[in-house]
Length: 319
Image (cartoon, rainbow, N blue to C red; front, top):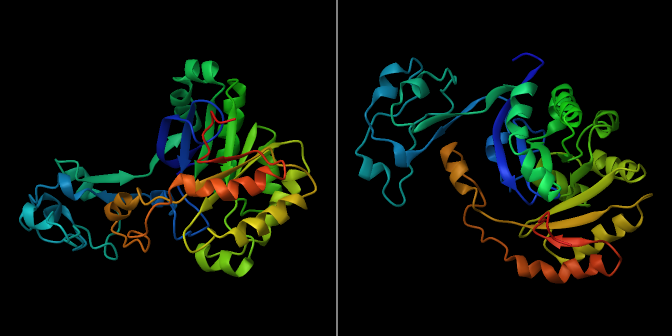
């Protein structure tokens, strides 16, 4: 991988929940956090991975024939592998070296590489295809992940080239980085979408694997700049879905040295469980019910009462 390339898991078009207007989201692979509820598990690791889509598998055995690492499970009848409650997985992940021979051999597209190398030019050429939608809606490009600051030089090039092409930019970040790294991206960022998981450091580390010291400090520093900030709180059952948490977060916001433009409360959903299955991961939240967005209207009011523009769901078209 050269410095002018990065692994991209998806370029999602016509997005309306990740900044103003109609947007194109660019997802960079690799993240320093390991949030239990991550809705983009394919972006966690910074190396290519393999999806196994069992519904597309004919159990022909071709992948078994080409695998040199004994990392493929022998075929079984398709109806058995796809039966309700089946735990069948084609790939033995701890043996797999990700040589991708099985993907190349699969004629049914049941095996798919997750994370394709792309250059800055390739990304922006695709992003620019939807310029008319940006101009009509006030949209643009959102650089997301994973974590863009984990690929700092590349992210800087992407944002800079977007501005060279007069495309509105949002940076979606966890804030878990050195301040100087985040600051270097601000010159080419119109809006920072800043994820905030918890104020309590113990609870934060327990569910994300990292301390929140840098995250809170960077948000404080960021608020003292003139950059527009949209804070985004993923509301997770049993983690930060209590009024006590929201009151703690509100207290933090009111003591920031500057202002935030907007707060988005993002209700937990389990729609991503399919991606976990495709990656062969047993997701601990598979059976946790999604939060009904209307349940967040009450906590949203406590922020609004303090003058913080607040949405539930983060739609770019909400007022």
